[in-house]
Image (cartoon, rainbow, N blue to C red; front, top):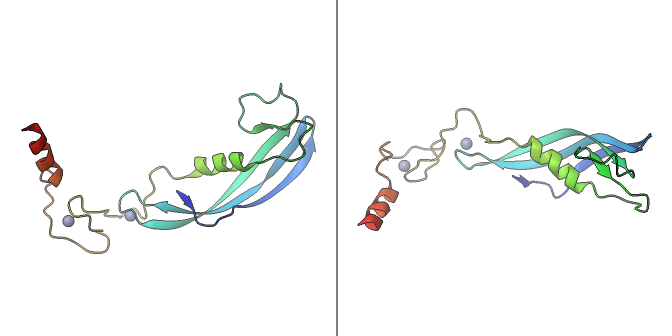
Length: 137
Ligand SMILES: [Zn+2]
Ligand SMILES: [Zn+2]
């Protein structure tokens, strides 16, 4: 997964709450994902809600990912790690360009969505088998 745009758009607003700030809003990112079957690159627009809390009180900042420690002596905070986390959670696990994607020919690498090839669909006959035989002899 790569970022298509060199910046991510965030519309966030901060609100004072009892123990610090609540930051909420939307993240908009343009990503490009690679189809796991045919390796084609596909643009992908992502809009995600974001809600985190900033607090100066260490006892509140526990294991909760949504709570970020923001000490009083600090006057700015970098949220890029949290934003990257949120985006990575939203990434498709095994993205495919479309349900019907035929993928690449395992033998010659032809993109079978675009054209066909003359390979026989016999997967036992790949060039790697030949290499294995050489090694074992
Ligand atoms: Zn594909
Ligand atoms: Zn082929």
